[in-house]
Amino acid sequence: MILPPKPPARPDKVSLRRYLQLFRADILSAQPARLYRAWMAEFRTPFFRSFLVNQPDLVDVILKERPDDFPKSNRVGEGLRPLLGNSVFLTNGATWKRQRRIIDPAFEGGRLKETFPAMRAAAEAGVARLAPVAKGDPVEIEAVTSHIAADVIFRTLFSIPIEHQVAAEVFARFRAYQQAQPILNLAAFVPLPRWMPRFYPKGTRANARHIRRLIAALTEARQAEIAAGRAPGDLATKIMTTRDPETGQGFDTEEMVDQVAIFFLAGHETSASALAWALYLLALYPDWQEQVAAEVLEHGTEEFAAIAKLRLTRDVFRETLRLYPPVPMMVREATCPEQFRDRQVPKGAQMVLSPWHLHRHERIWDRPDAFDPARWQTEAGKTCARSAYMPFSAGARVCTGAGFAMVEGVLILAHLMRHYRVELTEGQVPEPVAHLTVRSRNGIWLRLSPRAPL
Ligand code: HEM
Figure 1 (spheres, rainbow, N blue to C red):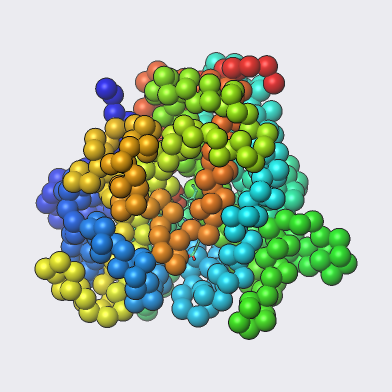
Figure 2 (tube, rainbow, N blue to C red):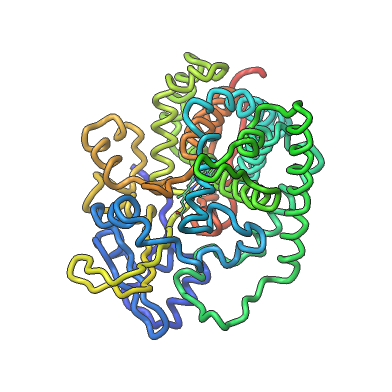
């Protein structure tokens, strides 16, 4: 059976210069094939040392057992700092812990039911927007899913749709920022000395300031509504009215703007990437697509409770997150010397955790490169899910929005499948590359046609 697209691996031995060149072009294809078999690998160059860790119990040491000894590397966010400031994605230690204590309650399982109607409204708006283009002509599907996922964030966070003037402008400017932004993790792999000036592409800082001003205006307006007792019960209100149980303090405007910026970026880029790949995979495997459509027709998407019944749709979404994890790699820093396997890891080494390689590891998964949603119901699949599957990371720093994203992803996929059929466009095979998230080099082009009248 035809396998879904996988980036070509580089030859095992290349010069440092060539490696950096490949790296700059795309992190995924810059790696050698042995990383799909190795438990651990070292990148040793005159300038930096990093280790990629695939062995499940060592991944657990870093993420779950001793996360404080492996904080986020400061370099991860270099390109994003002008935009994200002191956001929970970038902070460490006591500041990060305080921020999570204030944010986490808004994303608790129980609250997802309250958030669901806003997600559902975004899914419906997405289906309606597609009606004029779903006539069998090729459509670039990443743009479609980005639009829907951005709408989900604005509706769930601030109760405003993407057509709202501020929402539309933030969305457009984020796209420009992201296109100008060098690959997120580049700086983490190749640490730059502290004294070296950081260059941002022209206009990046001004754009970031503008986005932050727009978000600050939304936040201030919400503060006034909360004070007046007429704020909607959405995520922004929940976060802005939560006090840290340890200090009694909440977020001030500046710190809230930092968090809104990361919710927007981490929340829509990732879901958009996963949804676009899921639609591509369903176009590539029409038998699975028909089974998903039949499941959705049986259970519907109106009620929150129906989402739990969409078992196959969820397994398709899970399998998509395995093959195309939107965040392909994460980086931590060793704060003390370690011995991992037979290797000495020095203090300051960059520890790379790679959902991309772990999810396709040849010594862990059965037919690792094949699309097989049925694997999630097998014993072997369930074992792998526990030990070698981390699209949302794991441990204390696990994605805040993991539960949210699993409801959103299944709902939107189901709702699109209920109304449209997707088919491949001849000669257009997407090539996965890592930008901010895993995207296709030239977009993902699919033909959409109506499945049932709206
Ligand atoms: C399919 C969708 C998503 C995927 C695959 C995903 C994946 C991830 C991963 C892998 C991390 C850890 C990154 C690292 O440690 O370097 C992360 C962190 C984070 N995500 Fe998500 N995410 C998704 C959706 C969302 C949504 C919908 C939101 C919020 C609305 C969100 C908010 C965050 C935040 C705030 C963090 C930082 C957490 C921390 O460092 O404590 N994500 N996400």
